[in-house]
Length: 135
Image 1 (cartoon, rainbow, N blue to C red):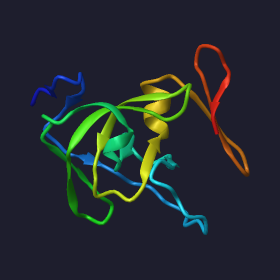
Image 2 (image 1 turned 135 degrees about the vertical axis):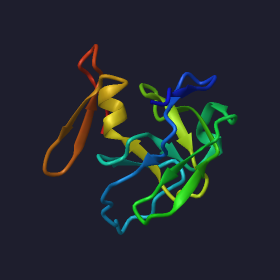
Image 3 (image 1 turned 30 degrees about the vertical axis):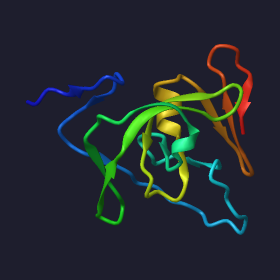
Image 4 (image 1 turned 180 degrees about the vertical axis):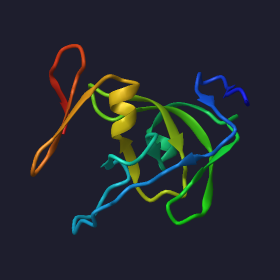
């Protein structure tokens, strides 16, 4: 078996590439560069905007597989401040993406956040304080 490779950012990557699967609903609203789309199928947070990153490690050499079957290169990984309460860690920088993706899997697994969906909204709760930190 192959051992995962670890880079300076503290992320472990196996020899396989990442895979993104998800369904996106098209909105009539125009999305800004700093808009985050909640994606329950994404395995990692992804941003296309370099200016959103607080820090970034560009030494990572890996790629992601897209649902279309194509592969796209990861240009870096780092941390991004989404709002005053949320700093995302291990965000993949992929300039070719058109949207920023907020991975439910990463929020609940790595961060321990609680995500609650209802008919019209999605709420993110701080795991320690139990307070709403995003919507």
